[in-house]
Length: 87
Image 1: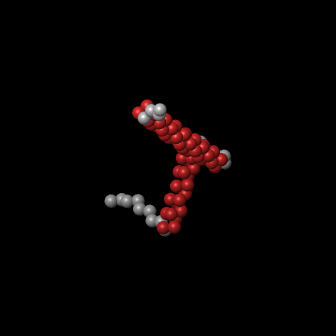
Image 2 (image 1 turned 45 degrees about the vertical axis):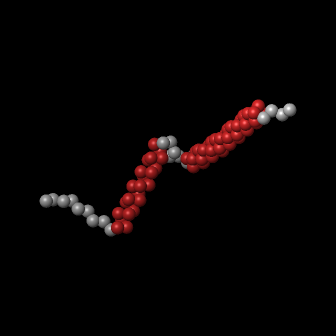
Image 3 (image 1 turned 90 degrees about the vertical axis):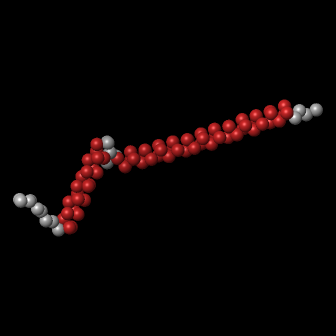
């Protein structure tokens, strides 16, 4: 059998794999529009946008929870005032 075996020192193989990984990462970033010098700014902008979204979402959920609690307290007060009228 004729096998084309290649032997490389481990350091050379590691360097080849690292180079291939870096080129693949650059290619993947470029394919999603993050291959230029402005990419870090774009990513920071996305992080800021997600942080703002979380803050708004959490604030809205808190407000909804407080509104539901007030409605329940009001309903209980109304029920109690009808069940136990004051004279």
